[in-house]
Every structure is written in C-alpha cells, then in structure tokens.
Image (tube, rainbow, N blue to C red; front, side):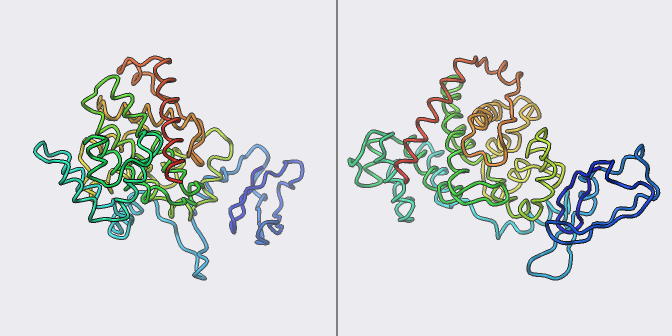
Length: 355
C-alpha cells in the first residue's frame, strides 16, 4: 500500500504483509517527523485505498515558510485568474524588442531607425555587438557599432540579434520549479528558434522571421509558472515519479492548464502578434491549431530540441513529433537530422560568444 505523509507529502510504499488490516496504526514520518495515521479498521486487502496522488491532489495544501497557517493551493480558473491579475508584476518582454519588431515590420523603415532604438538601451546594444562579433557570424572583432552591424549583417539578421539579445535577459534565469539552471531555458529556446527558422527556410521562406521569433519565446509560460510549480514541488514529483507521465501532463493535472496556455494569455499583454501567440499556445498540441503552419514548425523544432536533451530540465525526453504534422510539412528523417545538427552547432557557437 502507498501511504502519503500529510506533512511533507512524501510517499511510502509499505508491503501489505506489514500492515494489520482491521486496526488503526500510526508512526512518525522519517522525513519530517509528522505522525502518519492509517485507519485500516474498515479496509481489507481487497479494498484498495485512494491513490496517494488523489489524496494530495484533493488537499493541495502547503505550509508557507513565512506563515504559520496552512494555505489552500489554487488550481484551474481560480489560479489562472490570480496569475493574470498579477501580470503587471511579471517579467516584461523587453520593450526594445517590441519596438524593434514594429520597425522591422514597416516596409518603409531603414537601418538607422532600428539602430536608434537599440542605442537607447546601452546594455542591449552591447549584447547585440557581442553577438555580431561572434564566431557564428564570422565577423570577430570587425563590428564597432550597431549601425555598422546592420550594414555588414543585413536587416533580417540584425532583427535576430535584437531578439536574442533581449531574450538573454528574459530567458536566462534559473527556474527552480522546473529545476532548470541559469541559461538552460535560453539554450533550449535558441535551439527551437534556429530550428524553426531552418524548417521554415526549407518549406516557407517567407515565414522565417516569425518562425524564429515564435521559437525564441515559445516557453515564456515557464517564466510565469515557475513559482507556482515550486510551491507544488511534492505534487509534481509524485505525479511523474512512475516515469510514465510528462511534466506537461503534470501541469495540466495539478494546475489546470499548461505553460503554453498561460503564455498565450500573457503574450497578449506583451503585444505579441496573434500569429505567434497561436504557435506558442499550441506548440505541444499542434493538431488543435486547426492546421496553423507556424504552430507545426515550432512543434517540430521544440520536439527535436526536447529529444536532444538540451536545456529541458524536468521535461525529459518523452515527447514525440505528431506524425500528421510531419506528413503535412513533408519532412523526412534526413531533413530533421540536418536541422537538429545545424541548430545545435549554431547555439554552441553563440553560447561560447555570450560566455
């Protein structure tokens, strides 16, 4: 029988032969010294108790280190509403990225307008220059200003640099709830961004820019949910402990929604275009996007990155590419292998430069 401590939620698997059915027993939890009580007076071996996850899921309680009272943990719409009410306190999408994207989407804009925006944020401009001089772009030591970079690299590439420079701050944090070290999420996001662009270039070159942007921020929902997942660490560990469930499934079961769903809501406040929001919302469930090609592209790139095991934290390697998506884009195994090898090599070069 599996027994869950109500104090620390640690699960113990006690052999039936050690239990005295028909009696009430109690013993101290070795982990937290709380008293575990089991009433077996009305149970027999043939009457299976509720699963430990069902018990703890119903309680969903946590002892706050700062408060003496036990608090109910919210889930579903109540939790989502709480998160969305706190949007002003969430990490903002760097405004320079939004403004730069607006300039790039204007067919009458020019290099100087983009350079002027970047030079307002000196830290951003410095990161753009550092990336410009990376081994990946082959211009080591040759780029002296943002305007110079725009001339040497071109408009589209400079847009990528702006997005990467901005996201390095946003996505470079440690996520304790997801057990991701600083830089893990950014590395994963870079692989998905370059992978998405590579797939788009083979199938729909006109979507390369959007594919790169969507891939870069597809997991922004993890930034939003990390604290809430950290509060429910025991529940998440318990849910995935048998190795058969993904962390994504745990999000849906325990929180009532996954990181893609909450990211779609938050991206609206960041003024992200609807086409990108759809891809972000459904990147784990592409068939729900009603045939949206950008969603298909990001889904494939994300699945490849997850299966490569780079920057995935607890998400592991249990994800697979939807067969219908591959059929729709007519991608074969050789093309996918080329995409993942190319993107990993690219990201390694960029990370060396940023370090």
